[in-house]
Image (cartoon, rainbow, N blue to C red; front, side, top):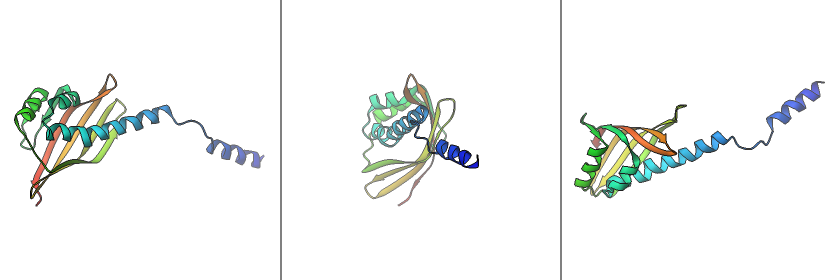
Length: 149
C-alpha cells in the first residue's frame, strides 16, 4: 500500500498537463506591457509621436510630474507636440512589474536619458488597465529627476 501511495504522489507531481491558460495570458500581457513601457512610450516622447502616445494613454490619464504639477492626456499630447527632445538615448528600466487581480498592472522603474555629455535619471510609477483587450495608462508619477554626470 505504501508503494502505491508513493507512486500515486510521484505520478501526480510529474503530470505533463498543458500550461495553464491564465499563465499564457499573463505571459503575453507581461510581454506587451514590457514592450509598451520600454520601447513605445520612450519612442513617443523621443519622436514627438502624438499618435503613438494617444494610443498608450487612456482618455482618463492623469500624471503628476517631478515638480508636483498635474497633467492629463490632452496636456501631455500638447506638450510633446511642442517640445522637441533629441536625446542620444532614452530607456526605461523596469524595477517593479505587478499584476493585480482586478486587471490592473503596475509598471515602475527608472528612466535613463543621455544627451551629449549629460546623463539624467528619474523614477516613474505607472498604472495601466486592460480595456477591450488593450493596455492603457491611466496614471503616472515622476519623481527624483537628477543629473548624474
